[in-house]
Length: 146
Image (cartoon, rainbow, N blue to C red; front, top):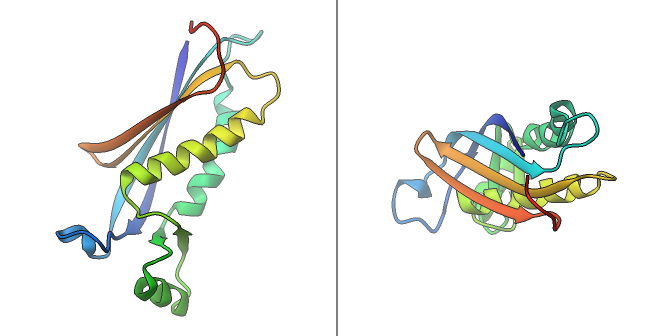
């Protein structure tokens, strides 16, 4: 069985290495789908959507209306700090592929902390525009998919 929940947030970034327009400061309306495959518990659930929200929403709140800044982008980082702007500083370029990998890691760690879980696979799909996305999956446990 598989469940999926959609989340949205707004976030700015730039890719200083980029040869095109993405080298400029800009933003996206991000949409993320969190999919969990697993076996049903005694109540007929993989995970309660309420419990999934308790894991995902604090992560999203940190990034919503923030500027995602690579720690090597000293000019922008200095500007954001000087002007007391909301920022998230990361050690990677803020491509949708890297953001997807980072979110997958964060969610994996939180889900595996849940005792007696029956999760088998986690997939994170992040759209940075309506027709562009990155997707990454991770096996969470061994077992037969249902």
